[in-house]
Amino acid sequence: MVLFDKKFGAGFLSTVPLTPGTYQFRNVAGEVLYVGKAKSLRRRLQQYRAARSGKMRKIVKASAQLLFEPELCELDACLAEVRQIQSEKPKLNVASNFSHRYPFLGLRSQGTDLYLLFTTVPTEFPDFEFHGAYRSRFLTSEAFFGLVRLLQFVGHPIPQKRRNRKRYSYEFGLRKLPPEWKGTLQSFFRGNESSLLSVLFDTLLERAAARSKASEVQEAMDALSVFFEKECAPLARVIEIVGFQTYPVPQTDRDPLFIRAGFELRSENYEADSNVE
Image (cartoon, rainbow, N blue to C red):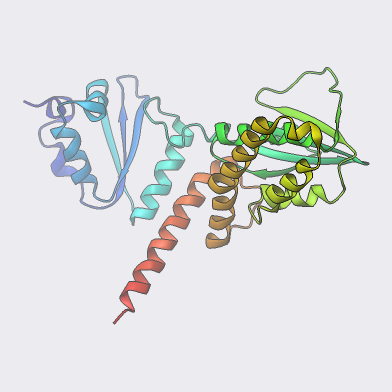
């Protein structure tokens, strides 16, 4: 008898519908180890039954219970999967499991001073205006720290006060930045336009200190360009596609938002193809 049948019963698959839905593998203590979704629950779970190696085999081997929940359509299954992962935080899931760590970038003005913030806990900083949530902490942090380095060629760094810094949060202040830069930064972070890159390039070209560190400047500019392309612009696009009204996008809503946008585009492409004679 195969391992799957020993664990869950030889007739288990006959009870599983061919409809979309989600499934949960649990251990002997009832803890959720893995959450998945499928267009066809029975076909997907048949793959686990047939697995002889790899992640599927590992999941079956570690599990003592298998539950499934049919959904009306594939979109509902995808959204239910994300909600369950965010709620249960199964140790064998990666995607959506760390949405609470999706970063935001914040801006705050105080007179002629401008403060920039990287954080995963925006509620701890009520005086900041936030943008995001972005998915990649790596891309966002590379862009943020690169931007801070570049802006120090333009404005004057404000000495940081020693205080209890929140975990995963970094704040930097600058004096004497041209007032229009805040709006340029806002548009960039929100994914509306990338003019910040050309403004930075033209400004830094006039700074001897920046020209003397051309390779470091280029590295930071590249990080900002990738960040806009991979994080800012895609987020702006899915907000427009779905018509999402809340901004910044809450961390737990970011992945569902992209899922909805993907289904919207698939539906539009299907309708377009159907209209081609």
